[in-house]
Structure formats: C-alpha cells, structure tokens
Amino acid sequence: MEPKIIDIKFGTDGWRGIMARDFTFENVRRVAQAIADYIKGEVDKSPQKRKNHVAGPVVIGYDRRFESDSFAREIAKVMRGNRLNPLVLAEALPTPAVSFLTRRFKGLGVVVTASHNPPSYNGIKIKCDGRAVMEGVTAAVESFIDKNIPARNNDFKEKSCRDMYLQYLKSKVNTAKIRSKLKRPVVMDYLYGAASGLLEDLVPSKHISSLHGERDPLFGGLNPEPIESNLKALMSSVVKQKALIGIALDGDADRIGIVDDLGRYYTPCQVFPMLIDYLIEKKKIKGKIVQSVSMGYLSARIAKAYNLPFEELPVGFKHVAEQLASGAAAIGGEESGGYAWKGNLPERDGLLTALLFLEMCTSLGKTPAQLWKGIEAKYGKSHFKRLDFKMNKPVADKAVFTAKLTKKLPKKILGSEIRGAIPIDGLKVILAEDHWLLIRPSGTEPLLRVYAESDSPARTDQLIELAKKWVGPNLA
Image (cartoon, rainbow, N blue to C red; front, side, top):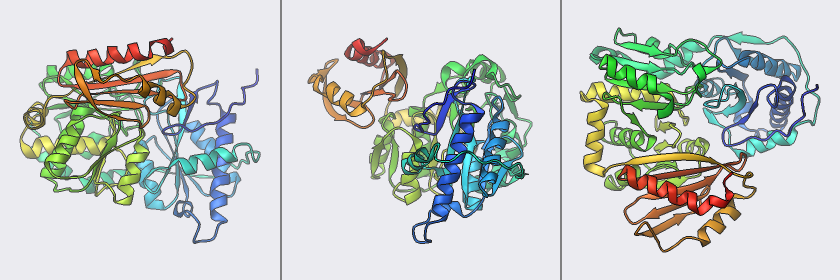
C-alpha cells in the first residue's frame, strides 16, 4: 500500500507525525524540498530584503529515534539536489546544538526530532540565528509544499560539531569551578536522549552518574519527557545515593526536569522562580521577565519584588525566544521545562540549565531543597498541576472556544473573586490570591489541556475538577 499523502502543518515547535503513517521518507522529502525552495527564494531577494540565515550551510541534526539519522541524510540529499550546501552532523546532538551552529555558521538549521513525544513519532524542527523560526517562516515553508518535485544528490558532507557545542557551553558556565566544589553525587537521567554522556564530558567527576544513557528508540517504554511520572527511577536513585540533585533531559535535550536531594520532583513553576532569583541576585541580570501563559505566579512576585517588568506570552518557546533575541526580555521560561537568559543564545537548552543549577548549588553551598525553602519563605508556596483530556474533536477556532468559555465565567470560583481573565492561547482565570486556572485546547489534536496552581494540593485539584465540569460536554 502506498503511503498516504498528507497535509503538512507546522505546530508550536515544528512538524510531527507518526512514523510509517505520516512521517515517511516521501513526506520528509516533500518538507525538505519546501525548505529548499524557501531558502532559494530568500537567496534570490535583494540584500536589503534577504534573511540573514540563508548565507551559510544548511545544518542538519537529528536525535536518537528510530531512523532519525537516515531521515537527516535524506534531507541532505534534497538540499544538495537543490544546489544548496547541507552539513549533516556526524553524531546525534541536542537540538540546542543545532541552534548554536546556525549562529556559528550563519545558516538555517533542520533537526529531525520529535522531542518528548512517544517513540512512534518523529518530526522536523527549523532553526535560525540561534533559535526556532517564527510562524512567518513555517508558513512560507508550508506554502512551498509540493510546488516542486524533490531533487536529490548524494554528494553531501558530514562533520562532527560536538566539541564546538561543548566549548560554547563551557564559555557560559565555569565548569572547572563546579567540578572543584562538587562533593556529593549528581544523578543524570538522559531518558535515552541525544545529550547522553555530555554532562560527564562537561564536568568530568567521579560524583556524576547517569541513568538511561544507552540508545533505545523505544525509550524504555516511556515518553522521553522529564516530568514526574517518567522520573521514578531518577527519584529513587537520588534517595539511594544520597545525591545532591537529580537532573533529567528530554529526548532532544532542550527541556529539563529537576529532582531535589530528598527525591522530590520540582514542577517548572518551582524551577523557574529558583532560576530567576539566582540570575537576578547573583548573576546581576536585570530586565523584563517573560513566561508562557501556562506558568505560575511566583515569577511575577519575584519580578515585582525586584521592580522588574513582567509579561505572559502564548505557549511555545519561540515567543519567549523572540523577546530575548530582540533585547526586550532578560529571562524567559515555559511550562514544559525550557529556560533561557541574557548572555546566551535565545534558545532553551537543558544542558546549560543543568550547569546553572549545579553552579547554584555548589557556589551557594545549598541543596535544591534549601534553595526551594528560601523561595517559599520569600514568595510563597506553589502546587502546580496539568492534566490532558481527550475531546470529541479538535477545537477548530481557539478564539471562539475562549469567547464562549469567558461568557460562562461566574463572579466567584471556590469562594474567591476572579481578579482577571487572560484570553491568550485559551483562557487563564486569575483569582484574588493569585491562584489560577488555564483551559487551553490543543487546536491540532483532540486534546484539552488544563493547568492550575495554588498554595495547596487540595485547592489545585479542586480547580482542575472545576475546569472539567465547565468543559464536560466537549470531553470524549
């Protein structure tokens, strides 16, 4: 049976599909040809109108999923067939490495990865100037789909850029100082992903051990996402080894999960405030703090305490990156575990964040539990939860869905007055105590994502249950 020709649509961070059904060599060639047509269209423009990310080679990276390297080489063949200059990485590397190389080589980047998705998926991300491309580029690429038959040529180059990426990371954090002050075990959970072994190279120490560093395209039966439900082995290992910290990275290592010295998983609504406070207080970084709308209230409280501007953005790190790249923001974070700050690329990078956490602990002489206790004392408690619910069908228009939901809002929720409602990427309802509830339809999948945060687990659960009642008829 011939593979079905599908419509190619780029989502929040690239195009993804189920392998052998959607993500096939034929469809990958279609996307590659569209990217090549986009690049050639930019090259043909006048220097004043041309994008600066088309001058150099097309850097092509990949993760450790099934056949990712083969898909990457197929993309290179199409680029070469279009008389472009593809450079295929000689080894699987984190997606942030490709972002770094687009800045280094002044070219576009293409990464074959499905990030944290289940093992049956694969995907393509497009990078430029050290970050993800915005909707204008992906829309342009979509417009070129099937305009031309994919051309192919086997004459392309492969190059190891691993050391270049490691040197970039070492230039941003004093790894030698971390190593000299590290006295307790650190457990890394690579979740079988593209960063496997890299922290040990950055901070060679007998105190660092790792889990799930081997290649396994099935990811040990888990999704390679650094969230609590996937980190039971890491939490257990931290307790058993009496470790300082447990660190997990997702499949392409742009996201991070943190487990403290007591074996407790920290949500991004806890991790981000710890990072912000350290970056402001110790690294002297000042400027606007931005975060996706699905993040919590402690970061806003910290911004207010330091008299810094604060803004919430639509979900998707590219929106955070845009503000960082323009200089409008100094620190940014998202609910899926991606963080970035001034002085680095405007890109989330799990390894760089891991190094910063190790610097925090070793330079301050504190465990993650002690760091969090300090944040709680100054800014309050955080109990965050997210659940995904299947819907009868995808939401065709988020704006219409949000407007209908807004009309149903009562004056009070669980006895608290509604202080505000933010219609960004769904509806975020903020209560008087800063507690909040976000209802966000996927738009491309029949999923409804519900987020809530309060100062107690019980109240957070109540907010989640309330959201389920509001949207009950839409759920499968």
